[in-house]
Image (tube, rainbow, N blue to C red; front, side, top):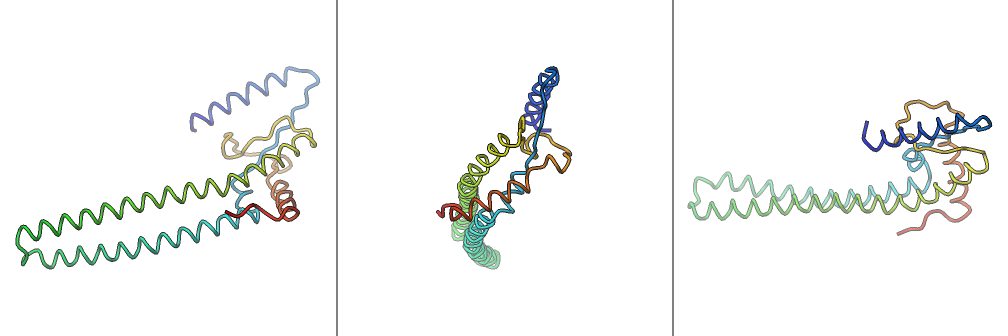
Length: 182
C-alpha cells in the first residue's frame, strides 16, 4: 500500500470512529471509481481518442527515425572493416548523437502526452467533482471516496456511485454541449 493510501485510510478510520461515537450520527459513505467514470463518459472517450491520435502521430515519427537509425547502424557495421579509424570513429559518434536525440525525443513525447492527458482530464474531473458534491449533499452521504486511492477493496453495489456519476455526467454534457475542445 502506498504511504498516501495508508494516511487516507488512517484519517478515514479516525473520522469514522469519531462519527460512530456520536449516538445520532448516521454514516453513509459512497465510493466512486473516477478512472472508470472518465473512460466511460463521452467526453472521456473523446479525450482518449484525441490522445490516441496524438500518440499515433508521435509514434509514426519515432518509428521513421528508428528505422533510419537502424539503417545507419547496419551501414556502420558493414563498413567498419573498410573505413579508416578516424572515419569509423566519426560515424560512431554521429550514430550515438542520433541515438541520443531519438531517446530525448521519445522522452519529450512521453512528457507531452502526460501533460495533454492531464489537461484533457482535468476539465472532466472538475465537472465530476461538482456532480459528486451534489450527490453527496442531496443523498445524505457523509463522504464519497475515490475507490482507487482510498484503499477500497470491496464495496456493496448500492454504495458504488460510479454508474450514477457517469449517467449524470453524460446528461449534463449533452445539455451543455460536452467538454470544451482544446
